[in-house]
Image (cartoon, rainbow, N blue to C red; front, side, top):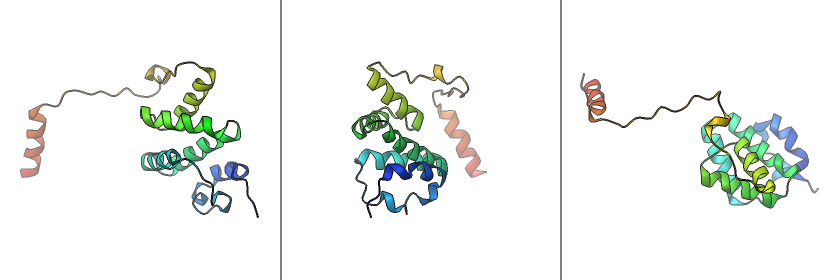
Length: 131
């Protein structure tokens, strides 16, 4: 039997636990960047990471594998790990426009509050350990 993996991705998106055992995907040779993306997505989002990975694969239902591969590589290089970022980078590359991956496009997400670490912060941690 010869399976076309693309025909099974919609089902795998619903049944992500079958991703590793899916016979249609056996022997499907994808560039290494896809394995890296999957590993990072699953490490960050667990089960939802598998679903996002399948969503990235589903982009190949519409776009050429070379285009999706370049978008995945761009996302990994930029550290924007997620389906939305890959899709955005893919569409920007096709449309020949620069990507806009700033947080202004996501007002519902909280902004990170980062401050300089001070020595007193470490002293407070040491005080908790010795107490």
